[in-house]
Length: 199
Length: 199
Image 1: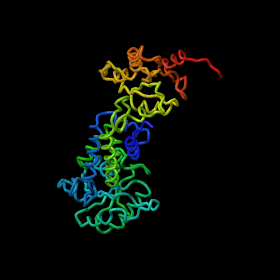
Image 2: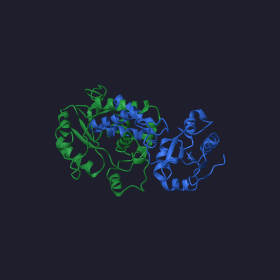
Image 3: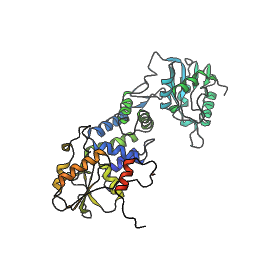
Image 4: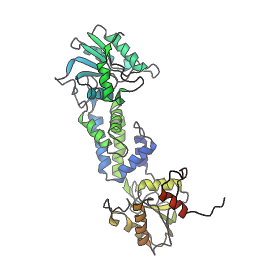
C-alpha cells in the first residue's frame, strides 16, 4: 500500500535480473529512492547508453560499441587461434585466464533439443566463413556438459577440412559447471590439457 | 580488455547497489547486454520515471509520486496513532505486519555521533509540528540498537507534553528464534518486558 506505482514497477524490473529475488529487489529499490535522484539517473543513463551503443561485433559477436570489436581489430592478437565460446561472459572469463591471446567466436548459446536450440540459432555460418586458411587451430570452448559436447561435435563436423587442428578444452572443468563461474586456474588447466578432437 | 567502456561503467554502477558485489554486477550486466535492448531500456525508463516523480511526502516523508502520500491522504487511517521509523523500508515492513493502520513519520536515519548524524539531520522538527493535539499516541519504532535507543530517547524528550502517550516497540526474543542463540541483551529485555501469561 505504501509503495508508489513507479517504485513497484522498479522492484518488478529489478526482480527479473539474475540472482535478484523479490527481497533483494526491494532492498535495492529502497536504497535507490532513499538517496538523491542522481543515483537512479546515473544508472538509467548508463543503461540507455548501453542499449543504444552496444552491439555484437559483426565478425565474432563479442560486444562492442561500434564496428569491429577490440579483439578482431587488435593486430597483437594471435590470429591463427580461434576460440569458440557459447556466450560473451564465457569469452571474458576465458580471456582473463589464458595468456596466449586468441581470436574469439561467440555462438550465442549451445545446441539443446529440449530448449529448441538448433544449429540455425547459433552463429555457426559466420564461424565457418572465418575459417579461410588464416586460422590454424579451432579451440572448442563450449561448456563441459552434454549440450556443450554436442555443440562441439557439431562444429567439429562442420569445420572439418577448413582448419588444420580442432581441439576441445580439457576436462579440468567439472562436468555440469559453467565456464563463467570457473576459477582462472581451472580454465588455465583446461587449455593446457586440450587434446585433438576426433569428432 | 573485452569489455566495452559502457559495459564497464554499468558494472561499476550496479556494484554500488546494496548486496551486489563485482561478480553479481558482472552477471547482471552480461544478462542485460546479452538480450534485446528492450530489457535495459525498460529498466532505465522506470529508473528515470522514479528519479523524476518520486519525492518524500511533505508531511511524513514516506515516498510518493506527488503531493501528500497515500497514507497521509487516506481518511481510513488511524490519525490518533503516529509511528516513528528510521527508514521508508522500515515503514513498509511495519505496515505489512501491523493491523491497526497508523500514520507514519520517517526520520531518515538515527542519531549516530560516530557517523556524524545529529538531530538536525533527522526530520524531527516536522514530526513535532505534526503533534498538534490530534495524535494521542506516538510509537517509537526506531531500531533496537544503542543508536536507535538514543534516537527514541531524544524524540521522547522533544515530544513530551505534546502527546498523551509515548511508547517504544517491545523487545525480546524474535518469533522462531532460539533462546540458546539469543544475545544476553535480548534475553534481558525479554525478561524485563515479560507479561502475565493467560494461557
